[in-house]
Image 1 (cartoon, rainbow, N blue to C red):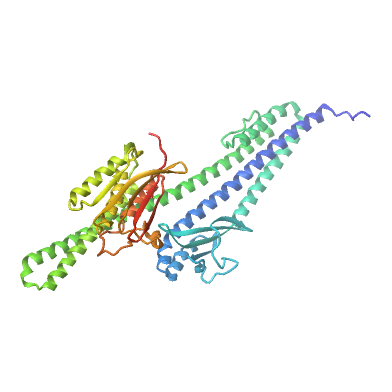
Image 2: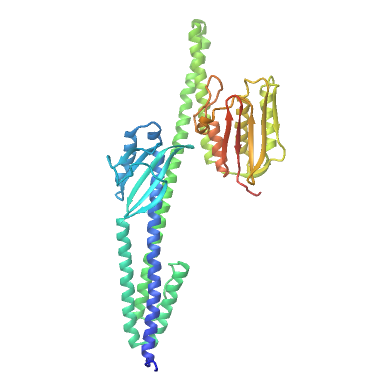
Length: 475
């Protein structure tokens, strides 16, 4: 049995409608998916940024176990109506502070969960660790309401559906009267929609070849693309503005710390100067106890001055541009070893063993700071041993070069190894070994800026070993 004959008019109308419907549906789907993805990605980035800032602002409250300060930090979230709940957890996973005050399950978990982002019904949940150096103080939980986002998505979907349905109606009406005139505009519109779908390029526009309803359809489609393009640009600008604001805030904090450090020098110089003048002018009128007290004052001011210098050096290293070049770590190590021996020639029992062929591509000045800190530490912590061995070398571990500085000096208790690289943390008494506790923090900052890792091993009175890697960079 033969299939009923379909007229050319109907075939043309069917072809036009099929092409238009397919193109518009694909374009609408692509636009909707892109809008949803962009909005959710933006929300996730904004929430991650907010979480990172809150985590950084909460370190002091967790470190000093101050729930009131933690609650004040979380209270700043009231300016963001999309965040409905938040909680800080201590290192054991217990609730430390909540927003709003007294919030409990199901708004906030009763205990800290896994770190990361996840969706839960109409909420986006973000969990981030609160770190101080390498030490985890606790974690932060944020719950953001997605209902406003869902409403925007639904409105966008409805707008796209209305546009698609309206375009289909216009196309059907025109194709019934002007089959020949419809073919070319529809083809152009379909090609434009496909280009948008394939290249995700929303700057593409449909070319209007007539002033009738199909021209209006093309203009409407172009307006829809323009709206999506405008929203994309707006979202990107918002992200850029947030990033710039964070960078500006960081620069202001650096400038503030630098200014405070410099402002501390003047009173320190005054204290040291007047103490020295008092010793020189009135020393014969002071008893032994008074003289000893003034000596302690001068010693303390010099130590504070050294601490300020170390802090400024740490800040400078954090901002300095890396200037990579090829050089030999061993040659730098030998120079530092020679300086140490010249400064204390009486320590003839110290043996330096420095390997050959340790060529790297890195910032020469910054790596010199690393070796200077590590070798001086080894020199300092072997001072109470009549004979000592300090080694600078390298070995391979899983295909990666690992550089190390080892000694057989005072060593340290591995139970406190997590404090080694935190600023102002010392594992030995000041009376036993001098120092400010900033040197190893500086070393870690430099190694991380070179894309490497730093770790330590040791035992009390059996020496210490500091190892580090550098990212493989070809000169």
